[in-house]
Amino acid sequence: AIVACDDGSVVACDENGVIWTRQVRSVMRVAPTLAGDTLYVCVEGRLVAIAAKSGNESWAHVLPAEVVGAACVANDRVYVSTADGSVTCLDTKGEDGKDRRIWQVKPGGTLRAGVAVANGQALVGDVGGSVYCLDATSGESLWKYVTRAPIRTAPLVVDSKVYVASDDMNLYV
Image (tube, rainbow, N blue to C red):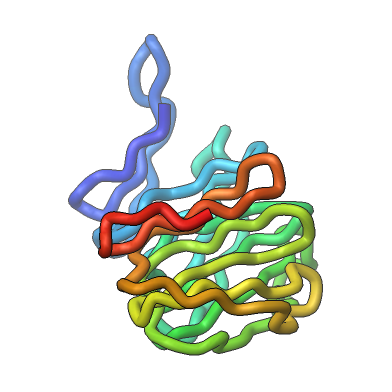
């Protein structure tokens, strides 16, 4: 199990006890994401990639603002939404010391939820009630759908259908 703690640390443990502990300098406001052998932790406007087996930092990327939803990993890319309204796509397999950013866009509105990625599309909702669909490869805007209330959770994609919950207590499909 891997646990994010209130003191700004991440702890990995198994039935025998603690395997490793890693300080990440700050309280995490969103849940870490485990994809393959890498843990993605969002803290203070940074995305930190940590090797799940050792706890060693693999790489880190400074983002334009604080991350507002858990990172989403798909096809060797990690997608994050930030408080300034940006969605950023980073290369998980990039060279050390190089800029990992593939694209960064502001689809519109204030974001308070994570990104969902499926079928080559990155989806995110804003507090104005809009859902934005971006091309996951380029960040290009594909479509927008307007609900009647703020969206504060990441969309969910099942069988090519997009599900979005909003503050009006409706589930949009």
